[in-house]
Length: 255
Image (cartoon, rainbow, N blue to C red):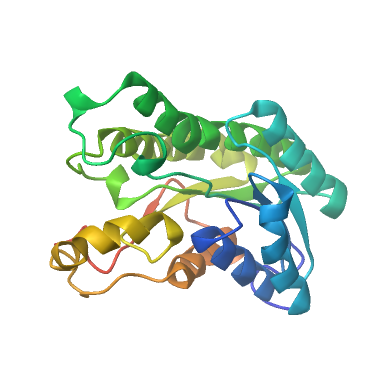
């Protein structure tokens, strides 16, 4: 396949659904060979099947991004299959309902809920970046994109743990961009607004009209719209872009 990622090898975490799946498919469309990672290899397999059916090349990987041995294995398996990791999309993440009750103010939140959120949404990104950077330093360069959120740039009541994690992702991105700029490694993050994915289903059911009143485009975004931004940031077309928070949110952050 030809495209703006032709000849590149990519690793996508959280690739079984939503933004991760859409990005893995878009990367393959643009010529990349893609390692699709999710919590289990079985969860990744459907995305891989879609890529291979369209004429692309992909492998399925299972692993927990909060487990450093699992993360090291994800990177090693990508290298074993494709020889290198040119592009990494650290997208695996969870919403607030996974770690505790929704709608809690900070003083109501259990320590376990806060820690559980940071373990996946922040420490998981740190671990992925760490092992991707080790490989990219060895091979002479690469591009990393992390999934942050508009919640990484603003506050959201009753989401303090999620907001803290996503602000942390933005900070990690900026600092890594500075540390590795001279090593030919670019590090950026994408900051989605409200996107139609399995993770947002409950929020949409309960608060759709209130949310859309705050979005100038008055609609949810599509995973494919985030994917296009990520693919561009991973490509050589974004060669002078590093340390950036790329907002894709229908105008929510600007309003």
